[in-house]
Figure 1 (cartoon, rainbow, N blue to C red):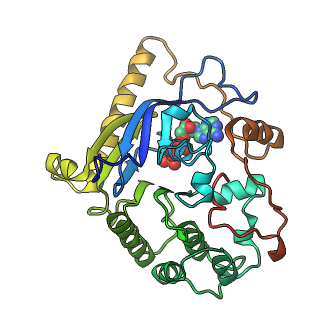
Figure 2: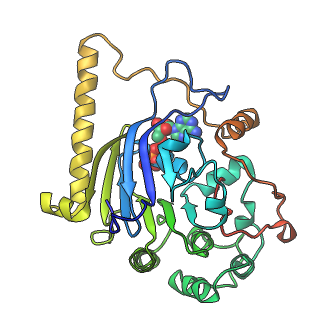
Amino acid sequence: MGVEQNSEPAIVINGLRFTYPGIDGQPPAGSTPLIDDFSLTLHAGDRCLLVGSNGAGKTTILKILGGKHMVEPHMVRVLGRSAFHDTTLTSSGDLSYLGGEWRREVAFAGFDVPIQMDVSAEKMINGVAGIDPQRRAELIKVLDIDLSWRMHKASDGQRRRVQICMGLLKPFKVLLLDEITVDLDVLARADLLRFLKRECEERGGTIIYATHIFDGLEDWPSHIVYVAHGKLQIAMPMDKVKENSKLSLMRTVETWLRKERDEDRKRRKERKARGLPEFNEQTEGSRAIGDPARAAVRAMNNGWAAGRLHSTVAGEDNFLFSSNSVLRS
Ligand SMILES: Nc1ncnc2c1ncn2[C@@H]1O[C@H](COP(=O)(O)OP(=O)(O)OP(=O)(O)O)[C@@H](O)[C@H]1O
């Protein structure tokens, strides 16, 4: 994949294998990897849509790429480096991750609280040092942000716009988007997508965008990647997808997902007929929400909360400005 095939790839995923650690920080005994044998290469300029059904593993893959989960360094290289081990990738702004679940993370960990405290959009956005004023002004315009918004009173969509703006202030080389447009109105979403496409075409940025919303995306991606059960099913340039299917993007993806679901149902029926349980036995997951002991183990073992030194006490004075505060949250 990629427009600059001779240059070093922006993203290389090489036989990725990943299991969420259990309470002891180790993969639960007998568990099958959640992500298995996953390989993908993307170059500067690529805009890759990551699609798959709920629970397929999209967020997990993006978080691994964003350096939030530890994997062996050779399995995932971002700009030639390991995102988990090389924190300068994110602190420099070269790698930016914008996730859809920041509110949930705030709730369990108390991190990134500032986005919901009594602080103005202006203070947040202008508080980040070392930002090109032209870029900052353009983002404020593209996202149609009113700098007088108070974050604790802003609507979900307004708060989201500020979050996106913060995440884009530094000119990324690799951007990971985990469905961040759900709260945006039609206009904001269209303008943002146009801006992001330009960032790839003109500056050679690389984007992976996981989404279930295909509205207005027909001509946006350069590539599409379909993942099911943690395994890569399809990785194709968009023009190939269009060549192979006369359907719209949404209908094409729908066809893939329907086929997957029908096959799953068939497999379950066969298992039942053989007297086996319909579903594979689930090893207990390791979600840390609401359980500090678990959170501590996770922090030690997969870097969920690594690198956070700043106070999480709400209050404008305690707010550490960083356009990458969304990272490693
Ligand atoms: N912290 C965790 N610990 C254990 N299992 C997890 C954790 N986070 C996610 N999972 C499991 O990993 C699988 C993949 O989840 P993931 O969030 O990556 O899927 P997704 O493709 O992004 O789904 P969606 O489209 O619903 O957002 C799911 O079965 C989920 O239950």
